[in-house]
Image 1 (cartoon, rainbow, N blue to C red):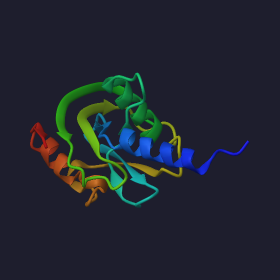
Image 2 (image 1 turned 120 degrees about the vertical axis):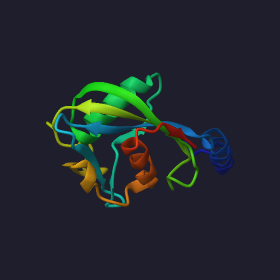
Image 3 (image 1 turned 30 degrees about the horizontal axis):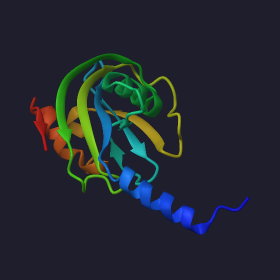
Length: 154
């Protein structure tokens, strides 16, 4: 059975309106017991960044952060800490307009490789004063907020 071309046009137009909404995302500043921060290197940009991603349907922020840390960084979340900030500038991520909630997290040493090696190609712990820069998706200012003990939003 062939689907008429007009149906594809209607679906594309409906999808454009439905999906042109900000997406809720989470990110963490994962810290090991010795104070080092765990970052992930993205496969698409080659840049280091904070682990995180979009919430799944029916998922809480806490569950989403724990899932993203396990999937991307291979770490177990020991505890979730303070809210560092909420970022919402549409130009931060060329893939979508995300509203990202960033929190501090105490985590275990990475124990597993990233679940999607095409998305995340490396995981490494860095001393707080030796973080790579720039970070993907404009997270450098978020790192500055965390280092300064600030809670910010945009």
